[in-house]
Each structure stands twice: as C-alpha cells, then as structure tokens.
Length: 164
Image (tube, rainbow, N blue to C red; front, top):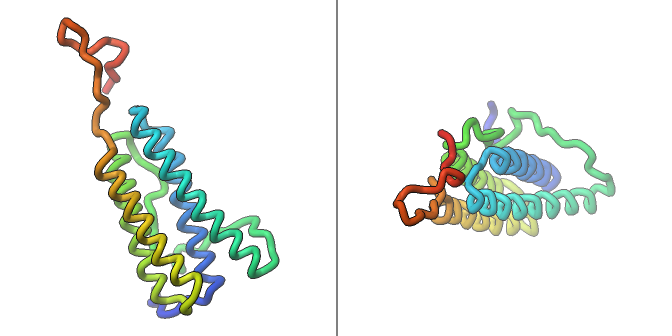
C-alpha cells in the first residue's frame, strides 16, 4: 500500500465518517454482547459520542458538497486505520474497545498532519483528545465482573450469578 502523505478536505471527511461508522458498529455489537448493566451504560455513552462525531463530519461533508451522503464504504486500502469490526466474545469487549480507541487516536493524530490547515485539522486534533477520554473511561470505569450483593449467608443470590 502506498503511503498517504496528503489528504484533501473531502477525502479526510470521508475517512473520518468511515472511522466513526466503524466505531458505531463496534459499540452497538459490544452493547449487545455486554452482560454487566454498568458496562452497557458506559458503552452506550461512548456510542452516543461517536454518533455525534459521525453526524458532525457527515453534515460538514453534505454542506461542502451539496449532496446527501447516502452510502459510504471507503476502500480498505485507502483507510488509515482498520478497526475491529465487532467484539468476538463478551470477555474481550474491554480489550477490543481499548484497542479501537487507540487506533482512532492514531488516525486523528496522523490525519491532522495530512489535511490542509483549518477547521478539519483542528477538529481532528480535538477528536484525538475525545478518543483519549474514551480510553480513560474504559480503563477506569469498565468492570470485569459485576459487583454482587451478598446476602446474610455470604453467598451471592442465585438470580445474580451469571452462567460462565
């Protein structure tokens, strides 16, 4: 694959829209696979923010081109980063989410140096920071196990124990 040394504004927007679409798909699948309610809430919060990012880029693209963006699937050879498409197992959600956030940080940092100075470059730098915050949330708030309420007999209630 040839190294990309410059991105035109519209190409940068397309790549960012594709990245955020991929993140949305990942988090939707992760939420479906997640069993711990607090983790679902955290993933839903991050999903909401990724949707805002995608909508921001999509609106800007549509404003610049005058065309409604109906379908976007950037050729994998043109992408600056490839995300994990969906979590493979519930116990891997955290690991894969953190890896995707790292990849998105890398994308925004690299792409910011490839687009012309201006709004998009600044937005890419800002979103790299937002993705860092997502990574911090995942690192600090994601629970590996659910905190079980322990009754007087010292054992978790059967209704609270999840099958392995």
